[in-house]
Image 1 (cartoon, helix red, strand yellow):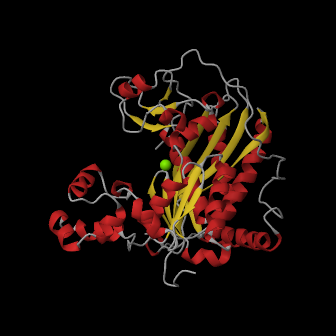
Image 2 (cartoon, rainbow, N blue to C red):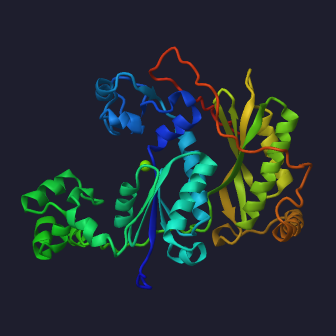
Length: 427
Ligand SMILES: [Mg+2]
């Protein structure tokens, strides 16, 4: 049992994030070395390598030119930033269902303070695996989770967890792990610091932790204290949930259709049921949205994402649905059928935010009291009980992707998905 004042921090780190997203969305890339890189074959830099590409010696930060020497048959994909940001937003949402204290550390890494969640979920293991399974179920992406008493050890634990697993560092295994750990495996120690430490005879974290602090301070200045502490596996830093820690930056729902379809009437109904879900959750957070968006993925794996920002605060199902339909009606299916639809809201404004305090017009208040009445029914009887508008929930469910691989004439630099430019609202 750990001391009661001890924190429990988790780090969620997506495995080969960008490459995994591309492999998820394009079966032809699965099991293949995939490298996310700029479109410039000579000057581009590799940002992510799939595990298959790593086996061939490739790593992120390497130039495309170098990577091509090691991996001439790799699939060099231009990547799609919007898509990764969208996935990242969904991951943050999932994290928020385990704890309100979430600190996005990068696009694919989130620190969570789960100290207060253990009692509710039962154990560190249930939370770590729960988050991973949730990400797998909702986003179909692999992730690794490290759990430890502080951020530095959580980061280290996540490295041990890779790929696609979790790892827990606690007082029982901490000393043993640090004793043999090379110093540059610790967060914040790069190769220069490592060289300097090695010259001082310090090779492992254990040695670093025992090294006289005075000498570390003399050699490294202010970071001497930090080095000494992390050598012992001590690092006192809170997970800094931004002001809006309990406030999602976006709320979204999406669904994969059981049968891809071109039937717009049917899709409008699916969209309505998604709007109902999104609005219900928006109001639960006491949020209103300024940006409304939709995501439409074709059976050709092309994904369209449209959004626009309005100068009003939207929270009412019918209102948001109207905006969603405007966006949807502009989507050109081409020759494709639709296999996934999503609705998202972003740019959220919070009712209790003193900066945003404003007097809503009377009709807004009236609408709010109607939807709140509906929401209280949903709270009581479940969300399926009543929805605003015509939305008997269509029969859809998630189906794992099982399409035959697409064939490409050219292996290199295939743009797997084409993101259409967001529709700008006319001034
Ligand atoms: Mg990662």
